[in-house]
Picture 1 (spheres, rainbow, N blue to C red):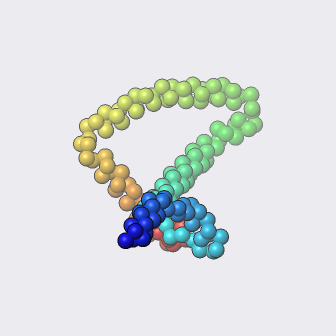
Picture 2: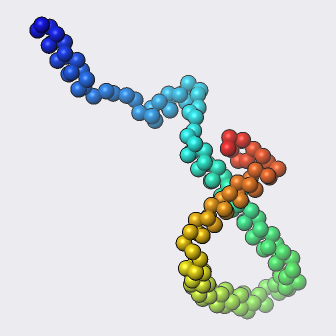
Length: 156
């Protein structure tokens, strides 16, 4: 009888001991060292796809800005050539451009105020729908583009 109580006491003490298990980071390092890659979670895949979509949209916006800048340079080439041949004549024009830029920068708070008032006029539930539709449009653009593998090599 006494042995059963001792065995039960030992089992209870064993269960009370903390179990030591290696962390997920350690397991991932071991798997990577063995040549296995851990399977990403669905959340990680969605976040990766969202980041890729944001990168595609940003690259498109930058390409559009570069195209607009090159179009402006081509449209004003005669004025730019004048500055190349007469550099001293460029100083008043540069001052004028800086003055215009400063005046335009004074309009930024008013424009932001107009955007804020526009956002306040919209219903509250409209803004999340707008954000989701923008992300979905990015996914559609990514899926329909020529490079169907995207930036992740087709793991989306």
